[in-house]
Length: 135
Image 1 (cartoon, rainbow, N blue to C red):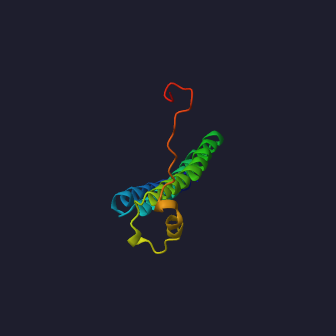
Image 2 (image 1 turned 120 degrees about the vertical axis):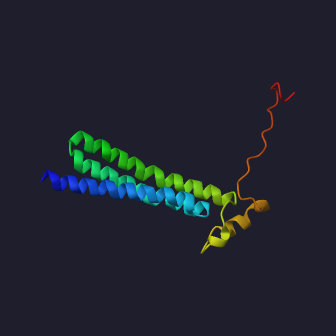
Image 3 (image 1 turned 90 degrees about the vertical axis):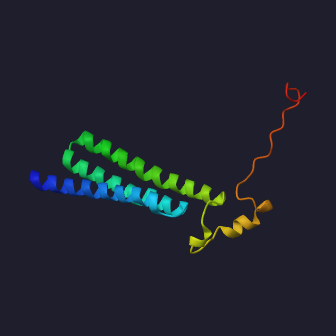
């Protein structure tokens, strides 16, 4: 029975390592930011989940499994959100190759922005009256 669990754990860890490797290759090879964000989040997250599952099968102690579940939950929450935010900022600062987009649903929102601005600009800070700079 122990050898069957070792084979399953090894297969999961190997699959996770391959997915993470393909994610790294995608980061180097893909042409634009949006494709790279896809490669950075999807296969990398699934790869880490496979490695965590393989480690949980191999370790199978209560304390270890709970710690691995926390790692998996943290990864599921942070990686897609951070990838989305980086891709959104890349689009708003016009670092996206629009010739590779199939549908551009955010373009009308950019065109309606004042002065065609992609990024919301903060108003210039003026010194308050009565301060040393304001005099």
